[in-house]
Image 1 (spheres, rainbow, N blue to C red):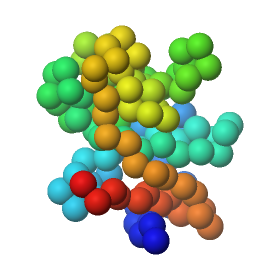
Image 2 (cartoon, helix red, strand yellow):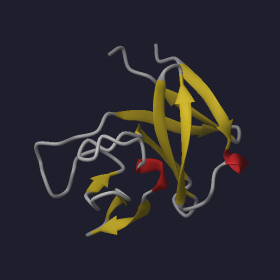
Image 3 (spheres, rainbow, N blue to C red):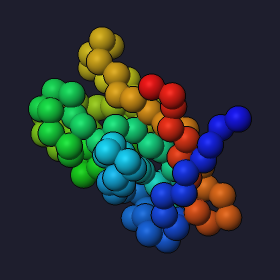
Image 4 (spheres, rainbow, N blue to C red):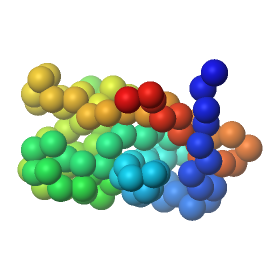
Length: 111
């Protein structure tokens, strides 16, 4: 059974933007897309710059794939899979995320 962790209220998020949440010792970037009524969660650490900055990246889509552009070196990461769209060998950890009763929740894996 998946254990969902309450992170914040949906109203705490900025539409079409990211915020960082500290969950345990992990920095997790949360992105809220109100048009789709969806939230995405992935590691906040940019693997190229090794800085915790992805929650500050610009979001958009590339060929229909929702993505965030790193504010450091501008690589694009899929919000769905965490895959770097320029380098298939690089992938961010993603987390299941949902909105339940106006609360944002994520499920941490067992890693």
